[in-house]
Image (tube, rainbow, N blue to C red):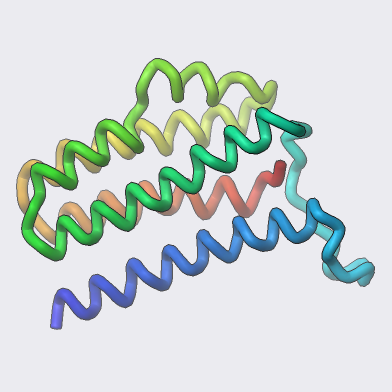
Amino acid sequence: MKRILLTVSVLFGLISVNSLFANDEQMQMGNHHHDMNMMDSRTSLGITGEMKQHQLSNMRGHVAAIKAIVGFISDNKFEEASKIAHEQLGLTPEMQTMCGMFNNEKFERLGLAFHKSGDELGDILKTKDVNASLRALNKTMGYCVECHASFRQ
């Protein structure tokens, strides 16, 4: 029963994050309604071209990493999950630099908090405590939701 609840909860979270990606891309492509109530009020990061595609690729990689972590948790493979959390979600020097490239203090703060929480998740996964791991994963995904609710490309 616990695994079913875990799977349903994570899938709901992934669908929500995926929906945010889809909404962001649709609005940028001009495929949105012209109703003023539908206007995207999130802050634009003002990035275009190659940088936009790089950022989108990074975020899709984060979603794939979360999916893999959930799979490893459900299979009791906590070491593998921890490795992915550290390597793909953690605060690497590259991610630290990237978070500061957008000249937006809130975006940088959220990005750094997300990546630090990825490292915290990796540490907690090593304890093999499912409940603590899920709480840490929830915290990490919370930064995704907050950032996507606040910013668009």
